[in-house]
Amino acid sequence: MRTGLNADLGFSPADRSENVRRAGEVAALFADAGLICIAAFISPYRADRAAARRACKAGFHEVYLSADLQACEGRDPKGLYRRVRAGELPAFTGIDAPYEAPEQPQLQLETDAQTLGHSAERLLAYVLEALV
Image 1: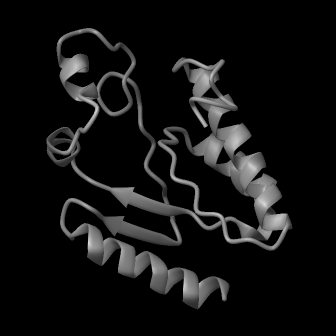
Image 2 (image 1 turned 90 degrees about the horizontal axis):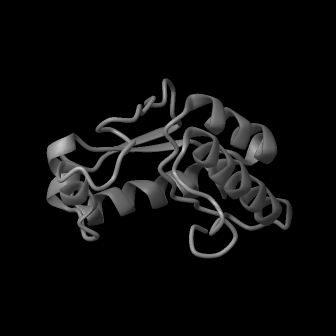
Image 3 (image 1 turned 45 degrees about the horizontal axis):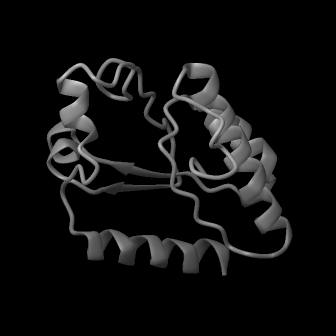
């Protein structure tokens, strides 16, 4: 999304909201076509997730992939946390920009405490139980 449909957006609060809004609308189109769409986004604001839920109506299921900051920094393939710590990336979610954790997600995967495989198994089990 960031390199295509949302390439015109930055990381200001307004741009982050618009990024999630567009993603929610695209996911809603897939859901309306009868497809299961798993959209993975850093969505820092509860209000934006609520708007995505409204766009997808009953088809929206919030899955919260949680991890502590140390785990996120340790598995940073793009080197973004290093750049944040060097002062090159301002307003980074979870460091100097807010992150509002979901209050009641349908599923929470604690990715700092379980393997990728276990997280994927739990997500698949949830999808099969809740959606199929």
